[in-house]
Amino acid sequence: TGFADDRPRKQRLLVVANRLPVSAVREGVDSYHLEISVGGLVSVKEFDTRWIGWAGVNVPDEVGQKALTKALAEMRCIPVFLDEEIVNEYYNGYCNNILWPLFHYLGLPQEDRLATTRSFQTQFDAYKKANQMFADVVNQHYQDGDVVWCHDYHLMFLPRCLKEYNDKMKVGWFLHTPFPSSEIHRTLPSRSELLRSVLAADLVGFHTYDYARHFVSACTRILGIEGTPEGVEDQGRLTRVAAFPIGIDSERFIRALALPEVQTHMKELKERFAGRKVMLGVDRLDMIKGIPQKILAFEKFLEENSHWHDKVVLLQIAVPSRTDCPEYQKLTSQVHEIVGRINGRFGTLTAVPIHHLDRSLDFHALCALYAVTDVALVTSLRDGMNLVSYEFVACQASKKGVLILSEFAGAAQSLGAGAILVNPWNITEVAASIGYALDMPADEREKRHQFNFKHVTTHTSQEWAATFVSSSSQTLYHFATTGLQ
Ligand code: ADQ
Image (tube, rainbow, N blue to C red; front, side, top):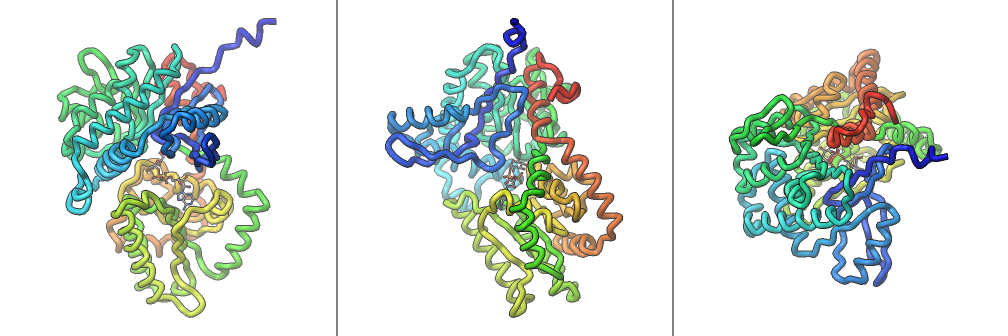
């Protein structure tokens, strides 16, 4: 009779990220509307998961905080309350104005960005304070045996805060951006303190082997700590460092393509662009995505290939992000200006070569767009992985379109054999690749697609999470290899 009780309990997992996978909008004094973010809740069946993070809303009063905590609890989410000043100095300041550009090789603030940076130290203090607030919430909810999985550059100080609370906590930290060369990391005023804090974790993970190697060499050159085959060892304490390339829930995309709503979208798009090849770019509007470079390469292609003029269209979907930041506003105007110029040069009364949208698309529209595309263009100047390239491949089972992919996206290491790899700074090379992709014979497209499709459908987000968590705890079974899904 005791069978159900004797079954091993699921491993409890606390996932900690700056943002919760749901956003809250206040509707009344004690009521909230909750929205699940796109691709947000990567839940893994093997684990009993709780999410800890900021809900993206300022809730200064206790009544509101209690109400939001209760509403989120139903979704297994636990809020960390950050006030406006902390959000400004920690999130907008240290995370987005300092660490994000630095990790993508754009350097520390200079000129315009320096003018808006009050002081590194003030922002770093706010960063540490915010990380401590996350640690307090984790500590309140932690139970013996839990695995704590910290995410991204927002929470580099968290592993140390957690271990100060409880040295036995199993702590993993994963970085979603690149980790840059140690020569770049060295320029950061708080370089050593951040590295040491991350090293408090038991396991440190990156998308690619190169990022892991950069991290280990930063520890060696900046802290004087030697790397070992497993990671980094300091005074007898080992921090394991390894690559855990993320994936997507490919089944979700494949299933969506069969839905009548998606099929209708696809039909409309095919009719709208009949007789023209469709090229696609889908990015958050961010300097790291190389959107101006991509559009300039398309212009060069049109300049050199007049026979393609009315036979190809580029659809660029750019979701606005960090819209209150002057640099991002400048980028938006720059992109609009280039698009306007090219459409003026090459458009006709009835058709334009570029359709540029400043907004995000819903999941079904996005799937339809991926499925009808002939050539996808991912030209990130740097990108931790880039999931758009994976999503495109997942939706191309019938069309077998071509992926042009930046060699500076982490995805180049996994989809490199199937994609056409380019240096996004080399406009001439990208323009030539567009021509090559548009003319590619069916058998070559098929071969390239099969390679990438196999990768995308076997290296999924579920497998990624299960592998990372089981390595963090080490006492777990190896789900990925024994197939206990
Ligand atoms: P991002 O920089 O946001 O992620 P990416 O990996 O491409 O970049 O993921 C973007 C997600 O947003 C995709 O799921 C995509 O479908 C969606 N999206 C983008 N543009 C959209 C649009 N116009 N409409 C609707 N949806 C859109 C960070 C790192 C990446 C890393 C991921 C995951 O910068 O390098 O791959 O985290 O670790």
